[in-house]
Image (cartoon, rainbow, N blue to C red; front, side):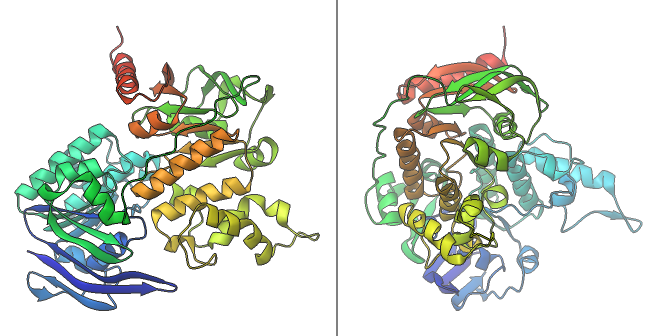
Length: 502
Protein backbone atom coordinates (compact mmCIF):
# COMPACT_ATOMS: atom_id res chain seq x y z
CA UNK A 1 0.00 0.00 0.00
CA UNK A 2 2.31 2.83 -1.22
CA UNK A 3 1.75 6.34 0.15
CA UNK A 4 2.91 9.18 -2.11
CA UNK A 5 3.02 12.91 -1.42
CA UNK A 6 3.79 15.07 -4.44
CA UNK A 7 4.80 18.76 -4.26
CA UNK A 8 2.89 19.42 -1.03
CA UNK A 9 2.58 23.02 0.20
CA UNK A 10 1.48 24.21 3.65
CA UNK A 11 1.55 27.67 5.23
CA UNK A 12 0.70 29.08 8.65
CA UNK A 13 0.52 32.74 9.74
CA UNK A 14 3.99 34.13 9.10
CA UNK A 15 5.49 30.73 8.24
CA UNK A 16 5.65 28.76 4.98
CA UNK A 17 6.24 25.30 6.44
CA UNK A 18 6.29 23.20 3.25
CA UNK A 19 7.36 24.42 -0.19
CA UNK A 20 6.61 21.64 -2.65
CA UNK A 21 7.81 18.73 -0.50
CA UNK A 22 7.59 15.17 -1.87
CA UNK A 23 7.79 11.76 -0.21
CA UNK A 24 7.15 8.15 -1.24
CA UNK A 25 6.58 5.30 1.26
CA UNK A 26 6.33 1.70 0.07
CA UNK A 27 5.46 -1.53 1.92
CA UNK A 28 8.29 -3.54 3.46
CA UNK A 29 10.63 -0.58 3.82
CA UNK A 30 11.91 1.75 6.54
CA UNK A 31 12.13 5.22 5.04
CA UNK A 32 14.05 7.91 6.98
CA UNK A 33 12.89 11.53 6.99
CA UNK A 34 15.52 13.97 8.19
CA UNK A 35 16.09 17.71 8.41
CA UNK A 36 16.76 20.47 10.87
CA UNK A 37 14.14 21.57 13.36
CA UNK A 38 11.73 23.72 11.38
CA UNK A 39 12.46 21.91 8.10
CA UNK A 40 8.82 20.71 7.88
CA UNK A 41 9.05 17.09 9.00
CA UNK A 42 6.32 17.20 11.65
CA UNK A 43 4.06 19.23 9.35
CA UNK A 44 4.42 16.56 6.66
CA UNK A 45 3.49 13.85 9.18
CA UNK A 46 0.45 15.82 10.32
CA UNK A 47 -0.74 16.06 6.71
CA UNK A 48 -0.38 12.29 6.28
CA UNK A 49 -2.37 11.68 9.48
CA UNK A 50 -5.19 14.14 8.79
CA UNK A 51 -4.25 16.77 11.38
CA UNK A 52 -3.62 19.31 8.59
CA UNK A 53 -4.80 19.55 5.00
CA UNK A 54 -2.28 20.55 2.32
CA UNK A 55 -2.73 23.94 0.65
CA UNK A 56 -1.36 22.56 -2.64
CA UNK A 57 -0.05 19.26 -4.00
CA UNK A 58 -1.44 15.74 -3.84
CA UNK A 59 -1.51 12.85 -1.37
CA UNK A 60 -2.32 9.36 -2.67
CA UNK A 61 -2.69 6.01 -0.95
CA UNK A 62 -2.48 2.84 -3.04
CA UNK A 63 -2.87 4.94 -6.19
CA UNK A 64 -6.03 6.73 -5.02
CA UNK A 65 -6.25 10.40 -3.91
CA UNK A 66 -6.31 10.68 -0.13
CA UNK A 67 -8.57 13.23 1.56
CA UNK A 68 -8.50 13.08 5.37
CA UNK A 69 -10.69 15.09 7.72
CA UNK A 70 -9.17 13.86 10.98
CA UNK A 71 -6.62 11.46 12.50
CA UNK A 72 -9.47 8.94 12.95
CA UNK A 73 -9.85 8.81 9.18
CA UNK A 74 -6.15 7.97 8.90
CA UNK A 75 -6.36 5.23 11.54
CA UNK A 76 -9.37 3.70 9.75
CA UNK A 77 -7.25 3.47 6.58
CA UNK A 78 -4.34 1.79 8.39
CA UNK A 79 -2.18 4.89 8.94
CA UNK A 80 -0.89 5.30 12.50
CA UNK A 81 1.65 7.67 14.04
CA UNK A 82 3.75 8.21 17.12
CA UNK A 83 4.16 11.99 17.27
CA UNK A 84 7.06 13.85 18.85
CA UNK A 85 4.54 15.58 21.13
CA UNK A 86 2.93 13.03 23.42
CA UNK A 87 -0.77 12.39 22.80
CA UNK A 88 -1.63 10.53 25.99
CA UNK A 89 -4.34 11.36 28.53
CA UNK A 90 -2.46 11.70 31.85
CA UNK A 91 -5.28 10.59 34.19
CA UNK A 92 -6.30 7.61 32.07
CA UNK A 93 -4.69 4.22 32.62
CA UNK A 94 -2.02 2.76 30.35
CA UNK A 95 -4.62 0.30 28.97
CA UNK A 96 -7.15 3.10 28.37
CA UNK A 97 -4.59 5.07 26.38
CA UNK A 98 -3.41 2.12 24.29
CA UNK A 99 -6.92 0.94 23.39
CA UNK A 100 -8.70 4.30 23.33
CA UNK A 101 -9.87 3.91 19.72
CA UNK A 102 -11.19 0.38 20.26
CA UNK A 103 -11.89 -0.68 23.83
CA UNK A 104 -13.21 -4.27 24.07
CA UNK A 105 -16.87 -4.41 25.12
CA UNK A 106 -18.86 -7.26 26.70
CA UNK A 107 -22.60 -7.08 27.41
CA UNK A 108 -22.55 -3.36 26.74
CA UNK A 109 -19.73 -2.68 29.23
CA UNK A 110 -15.99 -2.29 28.84
CA UNK A 111 -14.33 -5.69 29.24
CA UNK A 112 -11.55 -4.66 31.63
CA UNK A 113 -9.95 -8.11 31.82
CA UNK A 114 -9.64 -8.35 28.04
CA UNK A 115 -8.44 -4.72 27.82
CA UNK A 116 -5.62 -5.39 30.28
CA UNK A 117 -4.63 -8.57 28.43
CA UNK A 118 -4.57 -6.71 25.10
CA UNK A 119 -2.57 -3.85 26.61
CA UNK A 120 -0.02 -6.28 28.11
CA UNK A 121 0.45 -7.87 24.68
CA UNK A 122 1.36 -4.55 23.10
CA UNK A 123 3.47 -3.47 26.07
CA UNK A 124 5.43 -6.70 25.76
CA UNK A 125 6.10 -5.94 22.10
CA UNK A 126 7.89 -2.71 23.08
CA UNK A 127 9.62 -4.29 26.09
CA UNK A 128 7.83 -2.21 28.73
CA UNK A 129 6.94 -3.94 32.00
CA UNK A 130 4.34 -1.73 33.69
CA UNK A 131 0.91 -2.39 35.16
CA UNK A 132 -1.71 -1.57 32.48
CA UNK A 133 -3.97 -0.26 35.25
CA UNK A 134 -1.55 2.49 36.35
CA UNK A 135 -2.33 6.10 35.39
CA UNK A 136 -0.07 7.41 32.63
CA UNK A 137 0.84 10.53 34.64
CA UNK A 138 2.73 8.30 37.08
CA UNK A 139 5.12 7.07 34.38
CA UNK A 140 8.47 8.56 33.44
CA UNK A 141 8.83 10.47 30.15
CA UNK A 142 10.62 7.47 28.61
CA UNK A 143 7.88 5.07 29.73
CA UNK A 144 5.23 7.38 28.26
CA UNK A 145 7.09 7.28 24.95
CA UNK A 146 6.98 3.47 24.94
CA UNK A 147 3.24 3.57 25.71
CA UNK A 148 2.80 5.88 22.68
CA UNK A 149 4.54 3.29 20.51
CA UNK A 150 2.44 0.45 21.97
CA UNK A 151 -0.68 2.51 21.22
CA UNK A 152 0.33 2.87 17.57
CA UNK A 153 1.01 -0.85 17.28
CA UNK A 154 -2.46 -1.64 18.63
CA UNK A 155 -3.95 -0.17 15.45
CA UNK A 156 -2.17 -2.82 13.35
CA UNK A 157 -1.10 -0.13 10.93
CA UNK A 158 -0.12 -0.73 7.32
CA UNK A 159 1.66 2.63 7.33
CA UNK A 160 3.49 3.50 10.57
CA UNK A 161 4.96 6.95 11.17
CA UNK A 162 7.53 7.29 13.96
CA UNK A 163 8.44 10.90 14.82
CA UNK A 164 11.55 10.94 17.06
CA UNK A 165 10.63 7.62 18.75
CA UNK A 166 14.01 7.25 20.52
CA UNK A 167 14.31 10.82 21.79
CA UNK A 168 13.38 9.96 25.39
CA UNK A 169 14.33 6.29 25.72
CA UNK A 170 17.50 4.43 26.64
CA UNK A 171 19.85 2.62 24.27
CA UNK A 172 18.48 -0.75 25.48
CA UNK A 173 14.88 0.39 24.83
CA UNK A 174 15.95 1.70 21.44
CA UNK A 175 17.37 -1.69 20.49
CA UNK A 176 14.04 -3.31 21.43
CA UNK A 177 12.26 -0.76 19.24
CA UNK A 178 14.63 -1.35 16.31
CA UNK A 179 14.02 -5.12 16.44
CA UNK A 180 10.29 -4.44 16.38
CA UNK A 181 10.62 -2.01 13.45
CA UNK A 182 12.55 -4.60 11.44
CA UNK A 183 9.90 -7.25 12.21
CA UNK A 184 7.12 -4.91 11.06
CA UNK A 185 9.07 -4.07 7.89
CA UNK A 186 9.53 -7.75 7.13
CA UNK A 187 5.76 -8.25 7.49
CA UNK A 188 5.17 -5.63 4.80
CA UNK A 189 4.51 -2.47 6.84
CA UNK A 190 5.57 0.84 5.27
CA UNK A 191 7.47 2.73 7.98
CA UNK A 192 8.51 6.38 8.11
CA UNK A 193 11.27 6.94 10.67
CA UNK A 194 12.06 10.51 11.74
CA UNK A 195 15.16 11.01 13.86
CA UNK A 196 18.02 13.43 14.48
CA UNK A 197 20.35 10.58 15.42
CA UNK A 198 22.40 9.95 12.29
CA UNK A 199 23.93 6.67 13.42
CA UNK A 200 20.59 4.97 14.05
CA UNK A 201 19.17 6.21 10.74
CA UNK A 202 22.18 4.88 8.83
CA UNK A 203 21.89 1.52 10.60
CA UNK A 204 18.11 1.04 10.44
CA UNK A 205 16.68 2.64 7.32
CA UNK A 206 16.48 1.51 3.68
CA UNK A 207 15.93 4.87 1.97
CA UNK A 208 16.04 8.51 3.02
CA UNK A 209 14.38 11.82 2.20
CA UNK A 210 15.79 15.10 3.52
CA UNK A 211 13.90 18.37 3.95
CA UNK A 212 15.51 21.79 4.30
CA UNK A 213 13.36 24.88 4.87
CA UNK A 214 10.25 23.02 3.69
CA UNK A 215 11.79 21.74 0.45
CA UNK A 216 12.99 18.26 -0.51
CA UNK A 217 16.79 18.35 -0.95
CA UNK A 218 17.24 14.57 -1.10
CA UNK A 219 14.38 12.38 -2.37
CA UNK A 220 14.24 8.69 -1.53
CA UNK A 221 17.97 8.04 -1.86
CA UNK A 222 19.11 4.47 -1.07
CA UNK A 223 20.72 4.42 2.38
CA UNK A 224 23.57 2.28 1.02
CA UNK A 225 24.80 5.35 -0.90
CA UNK A 226 24.74 7.65 2.15
CA UNK A 227 27.52 8.86 4.44
CA UNK A 228 27.24 10.93 7.60
CA UNK A 229 28.85 13.90 5.84
CA UNK A 230 26.51 13.77 2.84
CA UNK A 231 23.46 13.65 5.14
CA UNK A 232 24.64 16.64 7.15
CA UNK A 233 25.30 18.69 4.03
CA UNK A 234 21.83 17.81 2.66
CA UNK A 235 20.23 18.91 5.95
CA UNK A 236 22.10 22.13 6.71
CA UNK A 237 23.73 23.04 3.39
CA UNK A 238 27.31 22.80 4.68
CA UNK A 239 29.71 20.48 6.45
CA UNK A 240 29.34 19.70 10.16
CA UNK A 241 30.90 22.30 12.45
CA UNK A 242 32.96 20.96 15.36
CA UNK A 243 31.87 21.93 18.88
CA UNK A 244 34.03 24.64 20.42
CA UNK A 245 36.01 23.20 23.34
CA UNK A 246 35.98 24.63 26.85
CA UNK A 247 38.52 27.39 27.48
CA UNK A 248 37.82 27.96 31.18
CA UNK A 249 38.36 25.83 34.26
CA UNK A 250 36.24 25.34 37.39
CA UNK A 251 37.04 27.97 40.00
CA UNK A 252 38.56 27.04 43.36
CA UNK A 253 37.06 28.14 46.66
CA UNK A 254 33.60 27.76 48.16
CA UNK A 255 31.36 25.53 45.97
CA UNK A 256 28.43 27.19 44.28
CA UNK A 257 26.29 24.16 45.21
CA UNK A 258 27.00 21.50 47.80
CA UNK A 259 24.72 18.57 48.58
CA UNK A 260 25.45 16.77 51.86
CA UNK A 261 23.99 13.33 52.59
CA UNK A 262 20.61 14.24 51.12
CA UNK A 263 17.76 11.74 51.19
CA UNK A 264 14.36 12.50 49.67
CA UNK A 265 10.76 11.35 49.88
CA UNK A 266 11.18 10.17 46.26
CA UNK A 267 13.65 7.52 47.48
CA UNK A 268 17.15 9.02 47.16
CA UNK A 269 19.64 7.96 49.83
CA UNK A 270 22.62 9.94 51.14
CA UNK A 271 23.41 11.91 47.97
CA UNK A 272 26.55 14.05 48.26
CA UNK A 273 28.45 16.15 45.67
CA UNK A 274 29.74 19.65 44.96
CA UNK A 275 29.68 21.99 41.97
CA UNK A 276 32.24 24.78 41.72
CA UNK A 277 31.68 28.03 39.88
CA UNK A 278 32.42 27.53 36.20
CA UNK A 279 32.01 23.75 36.42
CA UNK A 280 29.70 21.40 34.54
CA UNK A 281 28.83 18.35 36.64
CA UNK A 282 26.82 15.61 34.97
CA UNK A 283 24.43 13.04 36.38
CA UNK A 284 24.21 9.99 34.14
CA UNK A 285 22.05 6.91 34.60
CA UNK A 286 19.49 4.69 32.97
CA UNK A 287 15.79 5.55 32.87
CA UNK A 288 14.37 5.17 36.39
CA UNK A 289 17.69 5.90 38.11
CA UNK A 290 16.21 8.95 39.86
CA UNK A 291 18.05 11.77 38.05
CA UNK A 292 15.07 14.02 37.22
CA UNK A 293 13.49 13.33 40.60
CA UNK A 294 16.65 14.58 42.31
CA UNK A 295 16.68 17.76 40.24
CA UNK A 296 13.08 18.35 41.31
CA UNK A 297 14.08 17.79 44.94
CA UNK A 298 16.70 20.54 44.66
CA UNK A 299 13.93 22.86 43.47
CA UNK A 300 11.58 22.01 46.33
CA UNK A 301 9.29 19.79 44.23
CA UNK A 302 10.27 16.67 46.18
CA UNK A 303 10.61 16.72 49.97
CA UNK A 304 14.06 16.32 51.55
CA UNK A 305 13.97 13.86 54.45
CA UNK A 306 17.61 14.13 55.52
CA UNK A 307 20.82 16.05 54.82
CA UNK A 308 21.27 19.64 53.67
CA UNK A 309 21.80 21.74 50.57
CA UNK A 310 24.28 24.63 50.59
CA UNK A 311 24.54 27.47 48.08
CA UNK A 312 27.67 29.62 48.28
CA UNK A 313 28.51 27.86 51.54
CA UNK A 314 25.21 28.68 53.27
CA UNK A 315 22.59 26.08 54.18
CA UNK A 316 19.32 26.77 52.35
CA UNK A 317 15.80 25.42 52.12
CA UNK A 318 14.24 25.87 48.68
CA UNK A 319 10.46 25.53 48.67
CA UNK A 320 9.58 26.45 45.07
CA UNK A 321 10.99 27.25 41.65
CA UNK A 322 10.00 30.88 42.16
CA UNK A 323 12.04 31.02 45.37
CA UNK A 324 14.94 29.26 43.62
CA UNK A 325 15.04 32.03 41.00
CA UNK A 326 14.52 35.05 43.22
CA UNK A 327 16.57 34.12 46.29
CA UNK A 328 19.21 31.77 44.97
CA UNK A 329 19.53 32.56 41.21
CA UNK A 330 18.92 28.93 40.31
CA UNK A 331 17.33 28.01 36.97
CA UNK A 332 15.88 24.76 35.64
CA UNK A 333 15.54 23.64 32.02
CA UNK A 334 13.06 20.75 32.22
CA UNK A 335 13.27 17.61 30.06
CA UNK A 336 9.54 18.10 29.37
CA UNK A 337 9.80 21.41 27.55
CA UNK A 338 6.23 21.37 26.19
CA UNK A 339 4.64 21.12 29.64
CA UNK A 340 7.23 22.66 31.98
CA UNK A 341 9.80 24.48 29.84
CA UNK A 342 7.64 26.83 27.78
CA UNK A 343 4.04 28.04 27.56
CA UNK A 344 2.98 26.96 24.07
CA UNK A 345 0.01 29.31 23.82
CA UNK A 346 2.08 32.44 24.54
CA UNK A 347 4.49 34.43 22.41
CA UNK A 348 8.27 34.14 22.34
CA UNK A 349 8.39 37.62 23.88
CA UNK A 350 6.30 36.58 26.88
CA UNK A 351 8.05 33.25 27.40
CA UNK A 352 11.55 34.74 27.45
CA UNK A 353 10.61 37.64 29.73
CA UNK A 354 8.46 35.74 32.24
CA UNK A 355 11.34 35.00 34.64
CA UNK A 356 11.97 38.76 35.07
CA UNK A 357 8.45 40.14 35.12
CA UNK A 358 8.89 41.49 38.64
CA UNK A 359 12.07 43.28 37.50
CA UNK A 360 10.66 44.91 34.35
CA UNK A 361 7.19 45.85 35.62
CA UNK A 362 6.49 49.59 35.86
CA UNK A 363 5.94 51.56 39.03
CA UNK A 364 2.36 50.40 39.39
CA UNK A 365 3.25 46.79 38.60
CA UNK A 366 2.09 46.90 34.97
CA UNK A 367 3.93 44.97 32.27
CA UNK A 368 4.30 46.32 28.75
CA UNK A 369 5.05 44.53 25.51
CA UNK A 370 7.89 47.01 24.94
CA UNK A 371 9.60 46.06 28.20
CA UNK A 372 9.30 42.35 27.34
CA UNK A 373 10.69 42.95 23.84
CA UNK A 374 13.72 44.75 25.28
CA UNK A 375 14.51 41.61 27.26
CA UNK A 376 13.61 39.04 24.60
CA UNK A 377 15.01 40.58 21.40
CA UNK A 378 18.75 40.37 22.17
CA UNK A 379 18.42 36.83 23.54
CA UNK A 380 16.39 35.65 20.54
CA UNK A 381 19.14 37.03 18.30
CA UNK A 382 21.93 35.55 20.43
CA UNK A 383 20.37 32.07 20.43
CA UNK A 384 19.39 32.32 16.75
CA UNK A 385 15.72 31.52 17.39
CA UNK A 386 14.19 31.10 13.94
CA UNK A 387 11.00 33.15 13.86
CA UNK A 388 9.45 35.93 11.75
CA UNK A 389 8.93 38.01 14.91
CA UNK A 390 8.77 37.82 18.71
CA UNK A 391 4.96 37.66 18.65
CA UNK A 392 5.05 34.15 17.17
CA UNK A 393 3.40 31.59 19.47
CA UNK A 394 5.97 29.19 20.92
CA UNK A 395 3.65 26.30 20.02
CA UNK A 396 4.26 27.11 16.33
CA UNK A 397 8.03 26.77 16.65
CA UNK A 398 10.11 23.67 15.97
CA UNK A 399 11.38 21.59 18.91
CA UNK A 400 14.89 23.04 18.69
CA UNK A 401 13.62 26.61 18.72
CA UNK A 402 11.29 25.84 21.64
CA UNK A 403 14.32 24.55 23.56
CA UNK A 404 16.21 27.75 22.77
CA UNK A 405 13.27 29.76 24.17
CA UNK A 406 13.38 27.61 27.33
CA UNK A 407 17.08 28.41 27.72
CA UNK A 408 16.62 32.08 26.88
CA UNK A 409 14.26 32.71 29.78
CA UNK A 410 16.95 31.55 32.23
CA UNK A 411 19.60 33.69 30.55
CA UNK A 412 17.18 36.59 30.98
CA UNK A 413 16.94 35.78 34.68
CA UNK A 414 20.76 35.95 34.90
CA UNK A 415 20.98 32.79 37.00
CA UNK A 416 24.41 31.58 38.10
CA UNK A 417 23.42 27.96 38.81
CA UNK A 418 21.56 26.16 36.03
CA UNK A 419 20.08 22.64 36.09
CA UNK A 420 19.57 21.32 32.54
CA UNK A 421 17.66 18.06 32.13
CA UNK A 422 18.05 16.36 28.71
CA UNK A 423 18.79 19.68 26.96
CA UNK A 424 19.02 18.32 23.40
CA UNK A 425 16.30 15.64 23.27
CA UNK A 426 14.51 15.71 19.91
CA UNK A 427 16.49 18.54 18.31
CA UNK A 428 18.61 18.56 15.18
CA UNK A 429 22.37 18.32 14.88
CA UNK A 430 22.89 22.04 14.25
CA UNK A 431 20.76 23.16 17.21
CA UNK A 432 22.37 20.47 19.38
CA UNK A 433 25.87 21.72 18.57
CA UNK A 434 24.74 25.29 19.30
CA UNK A 435 23.33 24.36 22.72
CA UNK A 436 26.55 22.47 23.57
CA UNK A 437 28.57 25.57 22.67
CA UNK A 438 26.22 27.73 24.72
CA UNK A 439 26.56 25.54 27.84
CA UNK A 440 30.33 25.48 27.45
CA UNK A 441 30.36 29.26 27.08
CA UNK A 442 28.15 29.78 30.14
CA UNK A 443 30.48 27.64 32.24
CA UNK A 444 33.55 29.44 30.85
CA UNK A 445 31.94 32.68 32.05
CA UNK A 446 31.53 31.35 35.60
CA UNK A 447 28.07 29.73 35.60
CA UNK A 448 27.70 26.42 37.44
CA UNK A 449 25.79 23.76 35.49
CA UNK A 450 24.22 20.51 36.65
CA UNK A 451 23.71 18.47 33.48
CA UNK A 452 21.31 15.51 33.36
CA UNK A 453 21.52 13.52 30.13
CA UNK A 454 21.06 9.98 28.83
CA UNK A 455 23.11 10.87 25.74
CA UNK A 456 26.53 9.42 26.62
CA UNK A 457 28.54 11.34 23.96
CA UNK A 458 26.86 14.56 25.12
CA UNK A 459 27.67 13.81 28.75
CA UNK A 460 31.30 12.95 28.04
CA UNK A 461 31.73 15.94 25.73
CA UNK A 462 30.42 18.51 28.23
CA UNK A 463 30.87 17.41 31.86
CA UNK A 464 33.98 18.06 33.96
CA UNK A 465 32.88 15.34 36.37
CA UNK A 466 30.25 12.63 35.84
CA UNK A 467 28.17 11.22 38.70
CA UNK A 468 26.65 7.81 37.99
CA UNK A 469 23.20 7.38 39.53
CA UNK A 470 21.56 3.99 39.93
CA UNK A 471 18.46 3.16 41.95
CA UNK A 472 18.35 6.68 43.45
CA UNK A 473 21.96 6.51 44.71
CA UNK A 474 25.27 7.93 43.45
CA UNK A 475 27.32 4.79 42.83
CA UNK A 476 30.41 6.26 41.15
CA UNK A 477 32.12 9.54 40.27
CA UNK A 478 34.25 9.82 37.12
CA UNK A 479 36.72 12.69 36.69
CA UNK A 480 36.21 13.30 32.98
CA UNK A 481 39.03 14.13 30.57
CA UNK A 482 36.64 13.86 27.58
CA UNK A 483 38.21 10.70 26.21
CA UNK A 484 35.13 8.84 25.06
CA UNK A 485 36.63 5.34 25.17
CA UNK A 486 37.87 5.72 28.76
CA UNK A 487 34.75 7.49 30.12
CA UNK A 488 32.22 5.18 28.43
CA UNK A 489 33.95 2.07 29.80
CA UNK A 490 34.00 3.58 33.31
CA UNK A 491 30.32 4.57 33.15
CA UNK A 492 29.12 1.20 31.85
CA UNK A 493 31.26 -0.67 34.38
CA UNK A 494 29.83 1.41 37.25
CA UNK A 495 26.25 0.71 36.15
CA UNK A 496 26.91 -3.02 35.73
CA UNK A 497 28.56 -3.17 39.16
CA UNK A 498 25.53 -1.44 40.73
CA UNK A 499 23.12 -3.82 39.00
CA UNK A 500 25.05 -6.92 40.12
CA UNK A 501 26.51 -6.17 43.56
CA UNK A 502 29.00 -8.72 44.91
